[in-house]
Image (cartoon, rainbow, N blue to C red):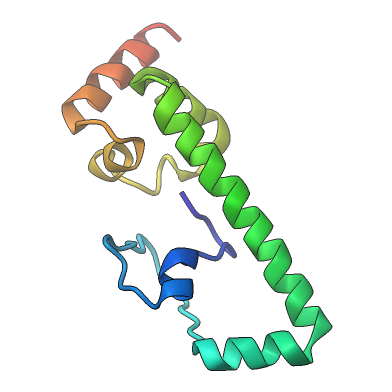
Length: 122
């Protein structure tokens, strides 16, 4: 889940000029910045600062992607919920249960059971 001042994008869509198979949903007011591929390539050629920025952005994007895939593939629903609480606790009052369940890859009813058990045990 992205937060303030984070970037999102699809390297696959960008590189191959393909439409996304899914969409991102902004849950709060959001600024959207767009850049044409040709303009991006020109900036890459002309500006070392821009190239450095893009490299940092790519590194962070790949790190986030790997973290997300590892979580989805190796953790069960409860573990994903607990990991979300640990890493994104500030988001808990800002998203609803349906949105959180979707992000965690579980049914809202399952999330409700997990949350109830978690809060009974704490």
